[in-house]
Length: 148
Image (cartoon, rainbow, N blue to C red; front, side):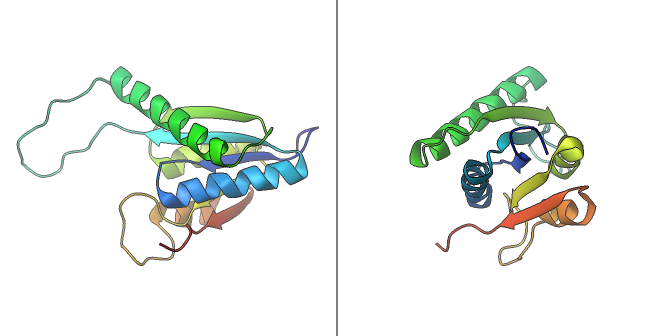
């Protein structure tokens, strides 16, 4: 725990679950004097089936798009839930689960949505949240999105 309160890492990918996780973390940090790092992992697309290739973006373009996406998500959530909680934004290349596990090495809490983009509809946990719950060195909170 930092001098000011818990260090909280939040996995953010734009999914309803990650937005709910960020809202939960903001409320928790507000109550505990914590600080938040919102983390968005990105990776170049992986084409496994033969198909017409779309034009590829450079790594710089993909990273800039990820940074813009994270900024917009955090701004949208904090506009709806005004707070004075400090929020750092980290955009990291790599698979989401691995990136989050590296980011929480010095954190007190990891907050993730129950499911991100993709996966099986109806699954209680997605692959990233399941991996984090199983391997994180800190407490993990998994937040389900509000019912649609």
